[in-house]
Image 1 (cartoon, rainbow, N blue to C red):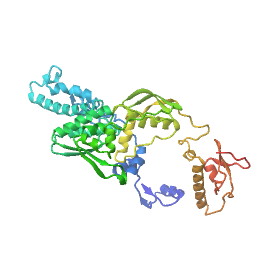
Image 2 (image 1 turned 135 degrees about the horizontal axis):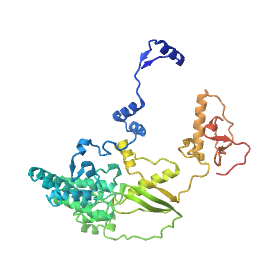
Image 3 (image 1 turned 120 degrees about the vertical axis):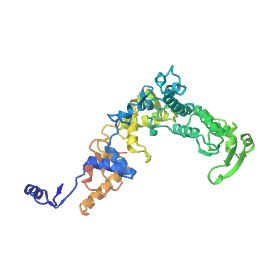
Image 4 (image 1 turned 180 degrees about the vertical axis):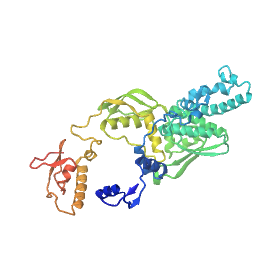
Length: 451
């Protein structure tokens, strides 16, 4: 496109006269710029910023299956690969078993391949291998997951068991596995499945070195190395190395007290809640129309087996619903290794649905919500003082250092809509022009109000 280096009036005349432009430039549309930057930038910050202008939705052509129509035309057991990937693993195993066993009475498609036995043999071998992989996940209690489940939506316990499942199927032997707290994020009921998997790796001829605090895992070990006696500068000593029973004779070991039940639990009276935060119709991932009440001003723990929906309820749904109620944006995942669109797509697929019915106080009358004007979001005295000072400095720089500040005396400021804020004694020096910009005005000759 032609570019004229002059004022708009000259440009209009030059275009009308068809004069030669100063130079020819290339116009890059906003759409092209956003797509090109997202695809080529290596900065996680820039990619996250550009992703704000992109929306992750299902493709209307494949309906989120990520394959062309020709690929989706191929079916197995009456389902294309996209439909199979959306099945829970327990249901997928049921679909695969007849083909793995070559049972034509349950899988009628096998009868149609009688004239071509090599096809039936190929289908049987593929089904056998896939079924063996799925059954490992079923033994680890992951039968409710689907193959198309996005990684950012998995809990830490689910991720730990998936990693172990890949090692079980590797069929390696003579390997040393170093595991750092594999039971982290697991419910005690899931620990048995973890121990069974560790035993399977050991039975294959491998060695396992495990850093662990979970007492059930420690008791299951063949050999214990206890480090102590305390943390930091008081640690670093090998207190014991041997079978678990021998640790009972080491008086300096902190692990011994808990492993052999010498330090019993001391019950205490729980603090009564001062109120309740009630949610209704919470829906996200494993949660379906859940009604729940959280006690306020109390120490609350949310328990349940791994994958039951604890993280979805507390870390995701609760945070998002309360943030939406208060008018704030829900905090995002700071993991830079996760693609921003994948994170946004996961949130769209399993976004929290529900509402707060009681317990969360509404914002006070006149309080400004962030989406209305973020300059009003933090008008507490300490934040207000910082904001006013910064604004005053900017105005002084803009006016060439002119001294148009208020006298150095206590002043009383009031929001246009909201309670008075007393800043007496803070010694502010600011321009009067700074007050309207922050939604404030000076109020003379009013009594001091206590904060």
